[in-house]
Length: 442
Image 1 (cartoon, rainbow, N blue to C red):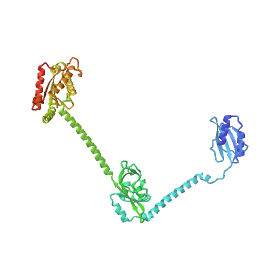
Image 2 (cartoon, rainbow, N blue to C red; image 1 turned 180 degrees about the vertical axis):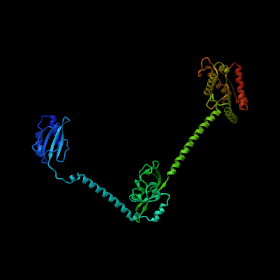
Image 3 (tube, rainbow, N blue to C red; image 1 turned 45 degrees about the vertical axis):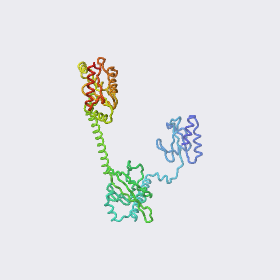
């Protein structure tokens, strides 16, 4: 390879360079090389040492052998030709024998047989180990347990598996003996612990396990079991740990029922939220006027009674304003009921924006509204009524055609006038309202 690189460099610098001297020098200085030649890509022999034509036996196109080697030569990164080298014969050794396919097959078979023998011997010695022998009566007793159970040696190998655990894995109890417990296909439950350390590993190191750990076992029957795993050490005569006793409580169905219960609770909570939302809608429908979203007459008097009683109890004032849209019938007659409804909505918006948030605004009937103002005397209530009247009369906040002019007549009363009931207070404000109507409206 080095000689081919040298020739490629020489030819790249000077295609007419005397390469024969290079090849003769290589043959002369290296006793392992018998002959050498340089052949162009088209097969023309450019140069060859004396012995080359007699020694070179490799036909064109055949791959190199151990004694006769072709190496490509390049000129400016393009194939130019080949370097042919004939080496001294090499005495066959172990490396040559290993190249023989028959020898390879024999060695492979021997290696596989040896490994199988070691595995069998290890299994046989394990079966003959007195420490792994469990009396038959003990086996039968452990098979009656409702939980799965494994007995492990110090290297985590299974030396006993009861029938309950074997049934979960789909293998026989005898087939489980000798297997590594950690290699059964365990998965740590994501909700329990991110650690991949198993309970029996901690116990065999002499550490305490703590609470049971949930492990998932995926079997070959496309089914997974979830176990609550608890491990405890097995001590020998010198109080050294000889193994571990591991119990597997199948909680698969319990977890499934808990998940189903959780989903049922979620559906119940969702239903309760939906019922609560619908109750709120019903409450709104039962207490609100659908056109103006103000309190309807029944809800208005229910709240009115409460405020009236509190005002009497605490000896506070309570104001009442009655609002009636002027010439409302003519608006309906000229522009239609749709425009009339729009007018009622706009008046309701003006009243609601003018009063306080804790004041009561209700649609008393038709185009008439009632406003209840806690802790408000007649003079203050009259000021509020005047602001409502002015806002309507100026029409700045009303989105109506210029042909429509809205005004309202208002009446005010308060507890100071001696009303004994909410209805009487409303009647007093209503009388004042009609006085405003008779005085020219607005």
